[in-house]
Length: 361
Image 1: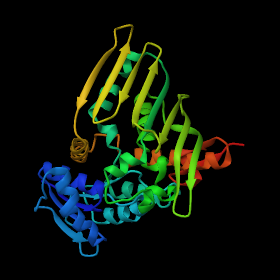
Image 2 (image 1 turned 45 degrees about the horizontal axis):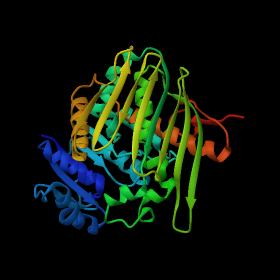
Image 3 (image 1 turned 120 degrees about the vertical axis):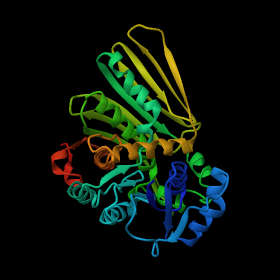
């Protein structure tokens, strides 16, 4: 049985608390806002999962115990992630899970976290749960039948309304980091699942990491808000795979979809309340498989993966710190590319910082 500490009593914190309890783990949750702790106990958790679980211990961030935890989960706004993750490693847990996006587009202290995790041996994961889904695993399983792959597309397009329906304590993006791209919000941060899933498939295609980013973003800027509503990316990898990512907060109904297009067929993945994988390979008739699940199931699958990888030093993870950092380099490059109107190159030898990003002439 694991002892788990969760920073943040918002949406993600509740999902992770429920998943941990479903796995029989002990849970301690903290937040610096007493209203958030009250809301968790009286509203969010009972509404989502049936009733409050008295086994979950609630603390203010100031009073929460330090040390003695196997896993530490960070479910706070992205602009607090780096400081909390660095401090969490100091508690010497087996692993740390940081919710996506890992950090802000400024990449402050991202390389510091990477170096510290490497030095201490504490495993760090980033919460791109769709990469560990059964539907993504099925898509990866089918890749060899495609023949040479021509291109790769992934889209996460979801209107703000759906997000705030699931977060009724918020009146809109202005009430949270979501309404501020520099804090890790906007389409580029909130829907960076699409970038991450694109990179996950590219790795499994042996296409290498993203080295070129050309982006167009549409910003909404008022006295109360400053976020990107559209984030359109053209990407190229180390081995020359070219593809596209679309992320937005305006599309309704929601469309979360990806396609791996090969010379000998295609694989489509649609992500929803039930994931669907469709494929046609090698001249055979089209087939499909439906993956029934609930949103809480997504987090249980994620935590089971973390448990497996934490207990097996030889096993790699598609939601490792390195994978999450690779995604943040693309997010950071996107904002620079849009600002300058030019392609941005990523040089991984320069570390996980702004130094890795170069504007092409």
